[in-house]
Image (cartoon, rainbow, N blue to C red):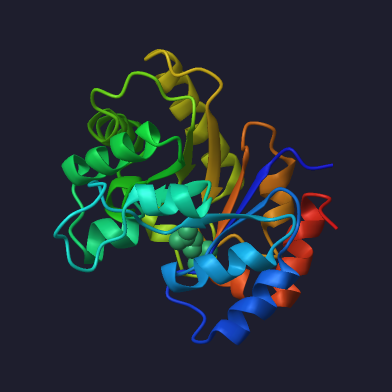
Length: 241
Ligand code: PGA
């Protein structure tokens, strides 16, 4: 039984296709969406039977003189279903602003890609309390989704930036409260039936707590998605075999 979203964000890993193939085969399960580096997408597409694929990033133009970029049309034509947009690492290291993120979302939705939009506050904001986190998220969501009316293909990943890559997650109950807030807020803007997932140091030790909370529609897993022993437990938390 799986009706939750299990996203595996490999980031800048692994180094070789042979490792990617091994990891991909191990993760080839229904309900799983793998986000590998671009160069592995096409070969993994041939290999996978049950898991779906997503890109970690995308450009906002369909084609043209934009050296180094990958367009949403290329992804669509390759049969890639999902795209991750606005990850905190892209905002931080590549200076992606809400204006850029908004353009990427618009173009991807136009081409019927399913967008996983990552949002989340810094440690400094969390330290100021939940009200500050809510205000920050409202602003981030409004800016990222500005002038986007019809959003049937959107998933929001609540990823508190401070909980990413550090080995211990947010308190699942606090994240559940914030996810509920995101759903209510976007509902008030007419975004209905929205899926909101959690990301930030999900691993075998905490995944069962996240999986047990109804309001959380799934997880986005980074570093633990590179280890089979971790993946095995993560899949079992969602009854994926
Ligand atoms: P992490 O990454 O699980 O390594 O914290 C999650 C993410 O960045 O999506």
